[in-house]
Length: 122
Image (cartoon, rainbow, N blue to C red; front, side, top):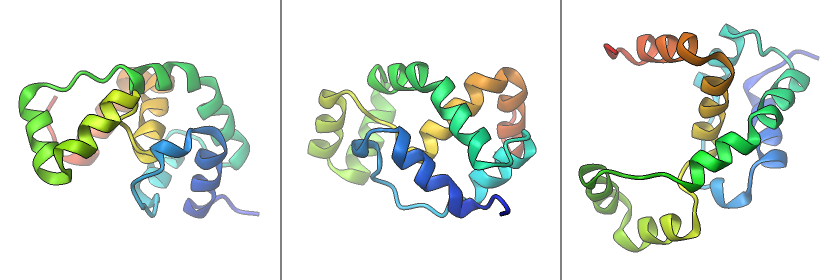
């Protein structure tokens, strides 16, 4: 059976906390990222997220937003939502947690890829 973007969410849901599942997403871009880095099966994806689970969750629990970012998200989502997430020790959605795992696995190579993909200069 071929690996597809439809295989990503079930792996993330089985691995990461439910509280981080707050951003409905197709995972089509993340699928392209995974394929570009040789993650082309449910088994490889599961291995990736489990390998970096502790580091990714540590980063999620310790997000430190600068004032401008905090204000932006408060305006977008409401101060009470942002404060409750930060107080509960979580910030990133499933797609972001997956991208953090890719960054942990592939380091600078993934960052260069991501900057290029998103049209940013480093």
